[in-house]
Length: 318
Image (tube, rainbow, N blue to C red; front, side):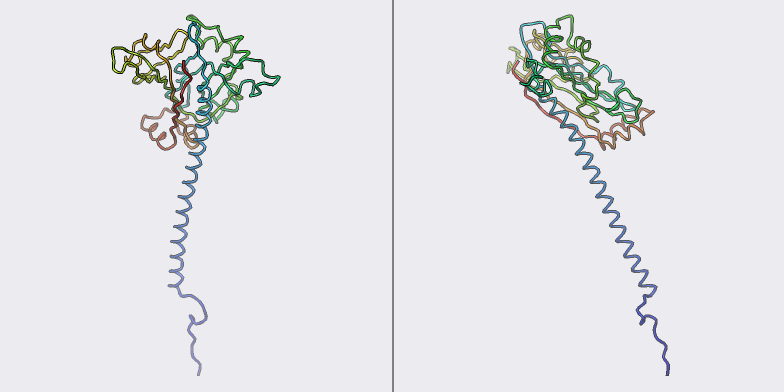
């Protein structure tokens, strides 16, 4: 007698088993894709933050070294440090404009003078150099090109002691500022790609901590922070250290008089920088290429794609 065999006994799968297996596989694939997406997003953000921190470290460390060896002399009419709000802020950026940047020029005993070959045949003597810092919006490789890869670039120009002595030291007075003398002699070299320090530096501010004396107050000696900026409390658009004292363009909030400030001394400086990630710069080049973002769009972009860095540097006694 013949009997009909069950098809399941041949090792096949029923339709219900196949549907259950497909559902389980779909769930596993979905979870794996979600985990991979989160991991890639975390990796990209960590990479962007790491690159931004490297740019900030390059800028902060370089500027800190120069300020730590700041050179000033009293009892003369020369100008030793010039820090002004960059007059070209309106052109720093495309769509999104940089809100604050200082143009810095000052004398310093830079250790990388003569390309760091101190004591060699390249060394022409002297230890007082002059440095200048300036933020620009351009292609870091081809400054004059109409490039699609522009970003916020910080440059540093170092003038070796021999040229500093010949063209800058003793060339300034009450009528000739360090800014004008330096620009006339060396300003054209500041945009040279060889002077590149860091990129994606959206904005930065310098705050000088000035120790002043007021016998009418208790305590009579106190420190006043003075920030180079466009607006805000205790800000000034120009901060100058001369052999005759300190001078600020504005009243810095009325906290001290011009005479008190002139007789004060700078004890430290604080550097604050905002670095935009590569993703943020890409958005600037595309989303805001031909339009001006609203304040909310600016706040959202900076909240997602920017990082803040601050460093306090103690200065040599004036």
